[in-house]
Image 1 (cartoon, rainbow, N blue to C red):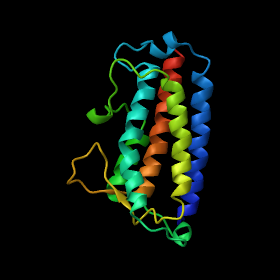
Image 2 (cartoon, rainbow, N blue to C red; image 1 turned 60 degrees about the vertical axis):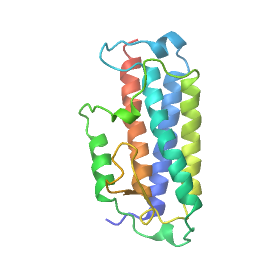
Image 3 (cartoon, one colour; image 1 turned 90 degrees about the vertical axis):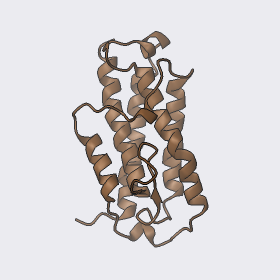
Length: 184
């Protein structure tokens, strides 16, 4: 079945907003000691998971803004078919699998997350949806962006992949947050 860019946009927008609200509902009732707790000795605290998501967002933010700044809108793009790039499909596919993954070094959080990490994450997620909306009239298949986790010579993914990976990544870690919170 053909997936149009506007349909992908709507699916990702709905999932991103829903997952952000799910995370907010889990985390806003917790105090700082619970956010910093390590109920899984080898795992991250909830604060570290939030920090990891923020680091990933921040490493993509400037290259994405520059890409849009130097590209031209395309009014017909939302009605065109969207397909994943090879590398984007691989990354998203790996994040969809339930098996534990070791995050790329560039995205790993330190031992202590920033102050206000929960609200920072929720703010970043609102900004992500706005950035995706702002990019709705660009051709998500034609615009290419590299991953900060891959060498510069690695193939670039399309912007639609970047959006999809972001949402899949957020949803994956919402499950991790839920699991850790359940052990507090």
